[in-house]
Amino acid sequence: MTISKEVRVGLFMVVSLVLLYLGFNFLKGIDFFSSRKKYYAIYDNVDQLMPSNQVYLSGVSVGRVSKIQIQQAKRRVVVELEIDSYVMLGDSSEAILNGDFLGTKFIQLSVGRVTEPLKPKDTLHSSVAKGITAFLEESAAPVADNLQSTLRKLNTILDNLARNSQKIDGIFDDFKETPGKINSTVDNANRTITGLSDSIKYLTANVNRTLRHLDPTLQNFKTISDSLKSVEVNETLTKIKQTLAKLNETLGQFSKGDNTVSKLMTEDSLYVNLNKMLLSIDSLAKHFNSNPKHFMAPLGKSQKKIQRDLDKQRKED
Image 1 (cartoon, helix red, strand yellow):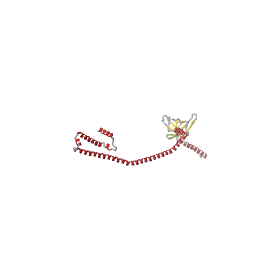
Image 2 (cartoon, rainbow, N blue to C red):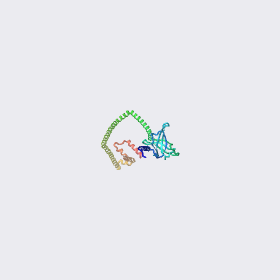
Image 3 (tube, helix red, strand yellow):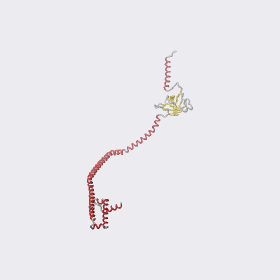
Image 4 (spheres, rainbow, N blue to C red):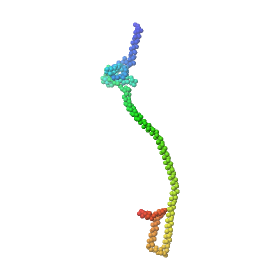
């Protein structure tokens, strides 16, 4: 039995179309040789979820989105999921709509605790994961509020600066004049200090010259004082010696016994008088030794001053 060319071409086209269909669906994630179960998940918004998007469990692809149907009257979207039959889902399992950074959507399964297994075509709990956009929106809201508050404060500051610009200009003008005033004040202070220093130097030099001129005068005063003291002491001693010599001469005459004086010497009155005289001379000598300034001072002292000194000395004794 021979097969015509037309039949061969027809069979080739049928086989090609079948292979093309199978390959296209395989690329979409449909595996005709694996057994899968269908489940459903209901969302208010699938956010551009497409059929053939993957279904993951713990990061492993376990199925795909096979069909998406919108129910406009109920304002919901029913998503049909084909999941490998070995995946055990329960009444607490959840289908989470999620997406990656490139915007590709997928379904993330959360099995949870399986107390009652789900049957094929049962409905899973559904939820929508927060994407990166939602996180950015939540984070950007406080930042935007703070930015608006900062901008308002900045506008207030700029308004105040605009109102006070003339005052600020005046302040800066004063600042420009301040260095010149400071420099002038410093120059005046320097000149004043320099003049004061010169005056002090001149005064010191004059004092030194005056002291040098006074040195010979002071030396002369000292020499004159010493000379006066020496002259007074020498004159006093000379007079005392002369007095003693005369006294000795008189006593010698008294001792001869052939004159009136020698006779008087034998009488008590004369003896007493002589004794008093000797006591006076002795007192004078003691007074001279104790108070030479009464005799040696250049101008001497008055009788009243000498008497006060003697009274004071007797009280101290």
